[in-house]
Image (cartoon, rainbow, N blue to C red; front, side, top):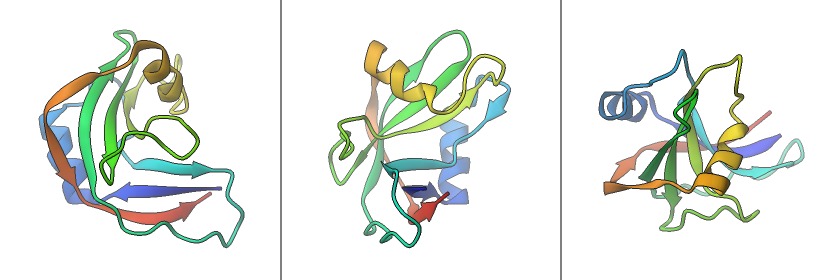
Length: 122
């Protein structure tokens, strides 16, 4: 199980207009906050979430980098992000973590505020 900030439908639509998904599977669902939480874990507090960057592998994976309460760093040291779209025969959503770690990301021209709902997912 994991805690996450799930995108509102309005924010998902707004971002899809700004960043049309490039690959066949559109994900664009949530920002992971913490992996490996137990059933019944506490839901994270509501947060200010902004898109601050973008990365594209150029061969089947793209992600939006986000800041949660002003920081792009998750508690585990990873980078907050939304897996945006992918080619499922080459990539899975978890591959966004490695792509960002290895390649970095391009900064957005201006932060884009989005609405999310904190949840525990499994």
